[in-house]
Amino acid sequence: MTAQSLHPRVQVVWVLRAVLVAAVLSLPFAGAFYLDRLPRWAPVAAAGVFLALGVTHAVLKYRRWSYEIREDALYLDRGVVTQVRTTVPLVRIQHVDSRRGPVERGAGLASCVVYTAGSRGADVRIPGLTPDGASDLREELKRLAIRADGEDAV
Image (cartoon, rainbow, N blue to C red):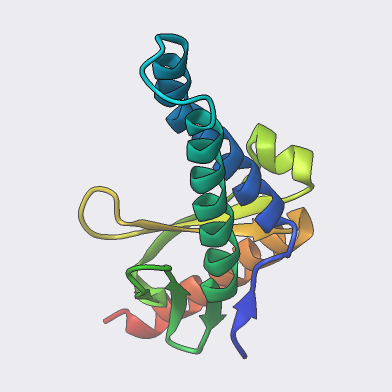
């Protein structure tokens, strides 16, 4: 299988998150403006900088995110500043969920969460899938994990 990218609509979700974060981070600048400690343009400039950084990060994150299923493992590539390549051996997969939070439902998207044997927090999430794509991925990973477990059994 070749590397799969996320659905382009996930960029909208990530950009909306960036807008929210920019608004929250700009609040102290707005408060300082109302206390006459900053010039009039400072809150707008701060919001603009935070928004530009957030939108740029969302676009770069989308371009970098990919996953691939091979015969032995699930491979994930992601990250903007720190690029991370994760390998999840199929034999280590415990269970797989498809998930749709309120924001994902609003964007018509879903995620696939793969839980693995190992330490606490040993799970990976593949965001930005269509609901059918998340279900198909869940079923494929489940089938491959069952087959890999049978091959690995003593």
